[in-house]
Length: 507
View 1 (cartoon, rainbow, N blue to C red):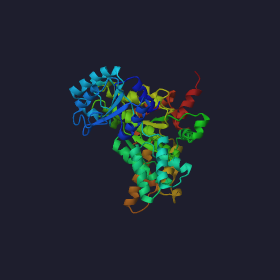
View 2: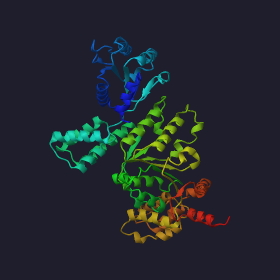
View 3: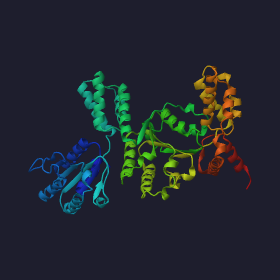
């Protein structure tokens, strides 16, 4: 249901108090004015603290610097006169007992009158005593059609043609920005070189990074890693490669739904975060990183508001990859937290969105401790698949060494004994293998020579792998995966062989 349709439905149903959290004050007021015309040409009166009422039929400026007086005007107008009262930034006054009481009195009165009060605010902040009488409706960011119309309007002003594909790419790159920001960044592009072109996408992406930084919830993460940078994990890579075109219009025509996401569970340092970056790069989608800790704030209701903002922003940027690193730490032990249920409400909002979202936001969540995750997170329907990423096999360790050394020493890779390196580093994770190479480079650099296979093995001998220091946790994860609760990311892992042997044993 579109915002206009839902808003007009609330007008007809005589909802007295409508709360709209948005940063786009000018655009939402324009949409409200259009809706007012369609609803019998209702009068629209707009109030703010500095200038009072605009459009007031009796006295412009009425209620200036007096929010209580602004509410009193609503009672003074004829009861049969249909009207919409837009009160800007009124959330700042809701804690005042006189304002709160007056709004509750008005909510009773307006049920029998064709009048509605619209509270505009930059965020949701509703006191508990007003919770039952205020209805919150979200105002979405501009959709692709709105953005395309704005781009075409600016193109008409420059008398410059732009082909269909370039126009679509430019409009799509603007998704996730407010209309004001879109106008500013496109005007900046025109002022820079006198026209709009497909090359302006990078300028728009920089504006998008700025917007996301200001939210302090999501990070716009540069993704330069390739699928080929992942050593091993053949099952996982095959699964991802099959879905490379699943976000295309061709896939929609075929009847495919948008991919939902992945949960990657496994031992630390085995390439889970690297996989998230590689997915975004391979699928040519923006990568947004969510630090779940940033969702939680001190004020009542603010954490839930930030969660809704995160969802709205990621959906506006869709198609995109939403990367949630170490999600197990964010929602561990939610039932026992003494935060008045804030964590439970945030978690509930998040997993409901995971299950019901229809937007092309591909969620990649990583977890190290499966015991900490609430069971609701693992239920089918939240993610397309749950993969277990275990310790690399000898063949995979050889591939990991090859990936790193090919990047660091592409011209003399054949001087390194990859098979020996893989054989001598059992129980090492990918991160520990990389660290052994870095330590070997320090050794060679300090002696003014290139590092060798022996240097890497010497460095590896000084590293105690996590598989030994956290043996119980590793064994628990392996037993959990072996029980069939997750799909194995590697085709030929030791765990795969162990499961095959279990299946071959007679009952």
